[in-house]
Image 1 (cartoon, rainbow, N blue to C red):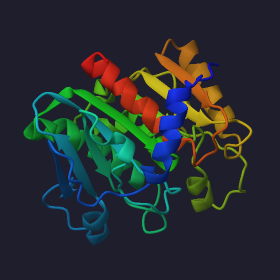
Image 2: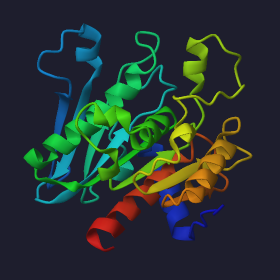
Image 3: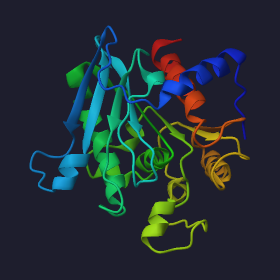
Length: 278
């Protein structure tokens, strides 16, 4: 497994951004960028009031054509959280689609996975309306959002329901996502806490099915949530075995929460490198 060696400049930049990283920017005043809030991504005929409430996204995009787009899923254990425009993704030359999805206990598995897949399909279908390039769409998320990013990219039947081949995703960056069946899904079933389950709702189950290039990012194995690094190491070993373009980065000295700052810095830099040559 690889360990990401951060330069002094990247560490300092990440730590400086950490205080603002979690802040939702309600009305950014970034010159050259627009923010459209609370766009519904369900069908026009949606009648479920909770789905109407939660299945909305924000589109933050630059005033230019052909830009790349990052789809971001928030964390919160599939039980909480809200869409967010992280400061480290602002003014980077690419768009950010920040997604809300339904939450347990008002919904049950696999509703939140289905919502994530629908949001990704919506982005592929509509980002050109804002000037974006559908060939440059990336997917990421932290914690529960990382789990959803993994499921969307690897369990391709979810996006297929909406007419999208998940292999079209340019690259996927799950940050501290579970690769076994998520603990909230286990809780729904009344299973013991901490005991892993691997079934159709475990991203690792779908590791041999191809998919977009993948960068798995975790905090320090000694500081992360229970077995979170080890889960990701297991998934990366299987992806490597099946010839899937993937890498695992362990962010030394960062825990499950603080890993978000250097992860955001890495993701933004990597998207710029891929799409802008820098």
